[in-house]
Image (cartoon, rainbow, N blue to C red; front, side, top):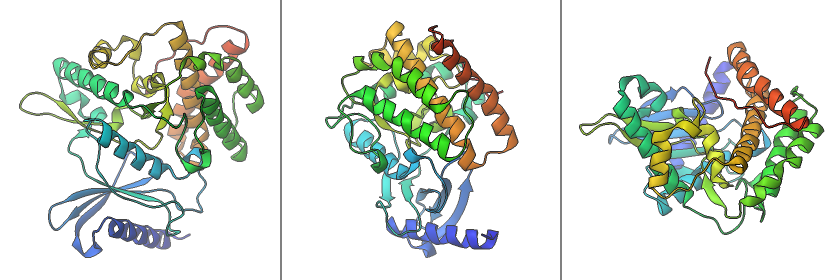
Amino acid sequence: MSETVAEERRRERLVAALRDAGVRWGEVTDCRMLGGGTFSSVFRVRTADGAGLVVKLAPAPDRPVLRHERGILATEAWYLRTARERTSVPVPTVLAVSPPGGSGLGDHLVTAECPGTPWEELRNQVDAAGRTRLRRELGRHTAALHSVTGSDGFGLPALPFGPLRPVWRDAFLEMVDAVLDDAGRFAVSLPRPADEIRKILGTRSDVLDEVTTPRLVHWDLWDGNILAERGPHGPRVTALIDAERAFWGDPVAEFVSLGLLHDITRDEAFLGGYRAAGGPVAFDAAARERLALYRAYLYLVMWVEARPRNFDAGHLAWLERDVLTPLGRMLGSWSWGEDAPEHHWSRG
C-alpha cells in the first residue's frame, strides 16, 4: 500500500471515529499524531469550541496482531468506564468506542483529553519530595482500582478469550497459551520450545490458586501511562491511561509494570500509599512466586509482539538484552528446580 493511500485510509478512520463521538471533521482546528504508542495510532484533536480529544486507531483489520489484541480498544473502554463508575481514580472519559466488527475500517476509541504530562517526561522536573508525593498518590489510586471486584470470573474480557474462567490459574494459563501460539504463528524464536515453556509455567502455577477473588488489574502502569502535573500545592497524578491490557485477576500482577524501571518491593512511597488506602500486599514467598510468573508472561508478550509490530533494530536489541535474556535465565532456573532470579528493569 502506498503512503498516500495509507494516509487517506487513516484520515477516513479518523473522520469516522470523531463522527462516532459526535464531532464533525469541519469542527476540528488541530489534529496531530502523538508518539509513544506501539500498538494503536494515537491522535490529539482540538475542536473549535476548545474541546480536547484523544483518538486511538487500532491496526487495520488486515494487519497482524496478537490474539489478546483483537478487540483491545473495547477492553480499554470497559476498564475506563468501570474505573470511573466504581472509583474516584482519574481516568479518561470514554466518548466513543467502535462496536465489535463495526464499520470494517478497524477499531477506534475516542476519549476526552486529560491534563498532565507522562510521568517519565516529568520526572526530572520534580524534586525528591515531589516524587515521593506522586508515588504515594499512585499507590492510593492503585489500591482503589484493586478494590473493584468482579463476579463473572477471571481473565481477559476481549472476545477472543471469552468466557471468563472461574479459576484464576486456568485464566492465566490460557493467556500464556495464547501468546505461545502467537509465537508459533509469527515464527518467533523463544529461549525454549513452546511446549516446554507451557510445562514449566504450568508446573509452578499451583500457587495461583491462592487467588480466589477477581480484581480489576490495569496491567500496564509503567511511568509512561501515568500523567502528572505540577501545581501550587505540589505535583499530582492527573490520569492513568492506556488500559488496553486490562483483565480481571490477581492484583499482584500489577506490580510487574509498576516496577518496570525499579524494584517495586523497595518502593516505600508507593507501597505506603497503597497500604494506607487499604491495599493488602506482603511480598512473601508465594507472592514473589506469582510475581515471577507474571513477569515471565509479560516478557513473552513483549518479545513476541515485536515481530508483528516490526520494531527497529535498537528496540529489538533492548528487548533481547532486557527481556529475552532474563526470560531464558528464569526458565532455565525453574527447569532445574531453582528459585527464579531477581530482575530489575532498565532502559539501557
